[in-house]
Image (tube, rainbow, N blue to C red; front, side, top):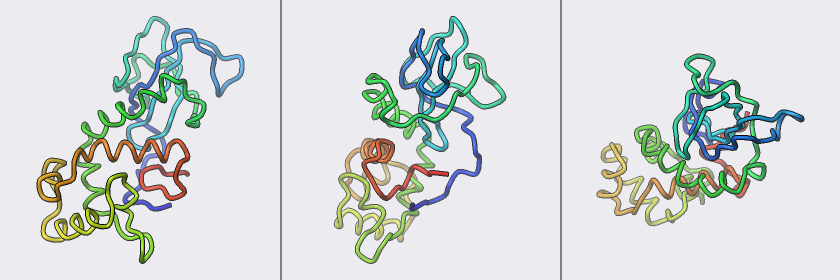
Length: 189
């Protein structure tokens, strides 16, 4: 596993809704039924199953407080889900919800472009991001050595890379779905 800066907290405080199942059956706790939310955690990018309060409503991409404090629409976090346990709706929404989350946490994700390092003499961690090959990787490293990137638009202007938010979200989906041996964003603890 390759990491830039692993999150210090063990539990998520916030999550982004992927799917809301008003009368669902839990994957994690047998016999558990009720209003369920499938979501992705903001800090650790954990796929979660969450029990919601009765009469609560959720929309895809909504940011909800799931930490021990400040819960209003959430009863409890039931546990972690694997990608293949997600509903079809959750799988379909994952890319766009991640894009929204990345935009809302821009500084954190721009930092990856400033900090990722080579994994082996022939493979740089930047190259694991879809759309970044040797040429873009070299341009990114050259430019960040001159001055760290301040935003996605700064990265786009200086390197010419298109839509880095979409590329990052695509990589995170790949890692969450088990499509990659090496992980940059997902930390398995």
